[in-house]
Image (cartoon, rainbow, N blue to C red; front, side, top):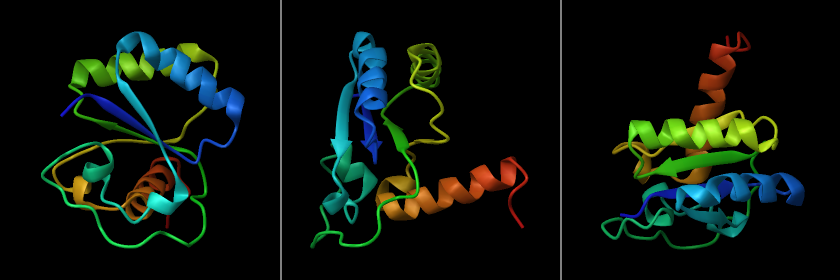
Length: 127
């Protein structure tokens, strides 16, 4: 599978452009995911041929924030992505994740919920 960065709910065009410009030199595949595809498994969206698509289109609420998912990247490449994002001037993207053997089967809504809970615990907003 090719190194891929999935972008969810990047509605601010300027921010999205800064992110894509920052990642372009790293020669990653950058894929913007539409809300209607939020029922699809993360692995399928990232191009894993072994993961089948799910049926139907998502009609629920939009995610509460922007989410960036890195798929197929080594630890060193993830560090390069994070450094490029910091230098991009795009601002904060609090909901970031790396695709794992477990979460590749989750859909974006499930993954966002998990990341959000972890983020809140890390920043003292959890229970």
